[in-house]
Image: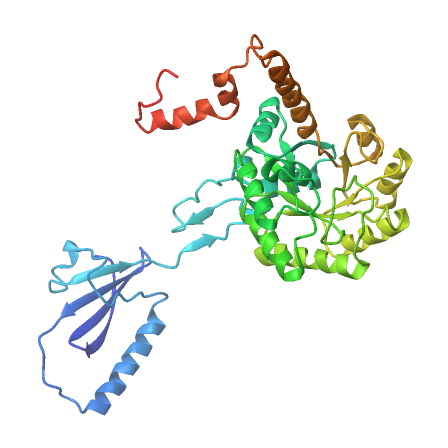
Length: 430
């Protein structure tokens, strides 16, 4: 056997501790031996002092000793030591572990590399795939690392969102006007409540959150700073990637109706502060889009002043609603240079039509078409209903779109695969 050094401590609670240090292995061996009770041979005070001295001496001779109070957890029998030690339960305590702290990058763990001992190589780095990122984080990365224009169709329910995803759009926009019309059958006059909007956003955002991001209308935030904080938290939990909050009064209206009124600069900025604070408190990546509707009432210069102030408070993107000309839109990008701007296009609204190519050349980063789904849906359904009323047919026969084709858009195949992969047979042969 290799030379060893033994350190012993007097009996403590009928358990004696012996430490054996084996230099070649650089390990420490603890031996626990249950002794029979023996009458004390020294006065209690002197015995306590001896125990403390022995423990201090033991600590000086070893680097790391881990004591196991239950002395039954990790036990190894060492047959080679049977001639030296009486039968006992021995715990092998290895030296200190060498660890490499994993780096945290952009909201996910970039790599893991830990080594239990110097003789064992570290694990290979594990990098999270992009699909593991939240929709908000993916959108944030695209805004920060890409320079192109994101084009987002306006959706308002599950079917319109499914259609947009099926044709290839990555980022969708949930329109407040469309949501109000679809869910409530009402005009966009601030009628939709916070619960209405959160419920709709939650459903759309989670249809396929691993591949698509949702930008959602948050209107005015539905109240003061406390209510805004709760609303931001609810949108965050719903997997919404970004939202815009505006400066209209609570009795608001669609941004392309006349007679809009906005709150003061101070009230507007209090909304931005509350939203930013809620995001930071949640440590979330959801993007804050500061929107101003002041152009109609107070003019362009006031809009730029409000957006600059919102940018200083931490808004991630700016939105000036209701441009009066293409030149004004291009000037806003220049006046707010270096800050991503969102352009809202509403055909037949109060602003001129700007094409995707024109918006890209101007330097906009996000472009939403709020009525891209709602207007065609109205036109198509109205024509079919009128024909049914006057001719007795809808005109859909022969178009090639039947129930199965529509259900395929809504995830029929994926749903059946889930059932079959779990061993189900209820939907075979559809």
